Length: 79
Figure (cartoon, rainbow, N blue to C red):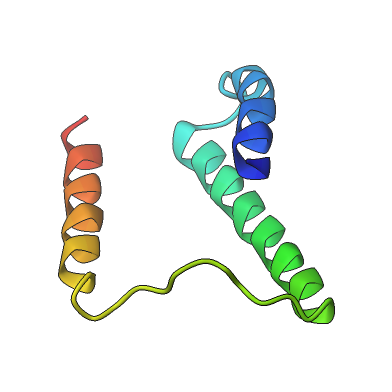
């Protein structure tokens, strides 16, 4: 839920920066910010000794995940 709120919060700021930065650089900044945010959240969750309720990926699911990633990359190169 927090990720959706933060993503929505970034949209207006992205519109301001799109004229100043290349789309690739802007996307890089957004992904970098998401990575830093998740690293901070992971650090705080480990310090609080909370157990993760999120299911991990299984070996059976990995081919599907790799297919989704490759289709996403292929889709980006088409546009």
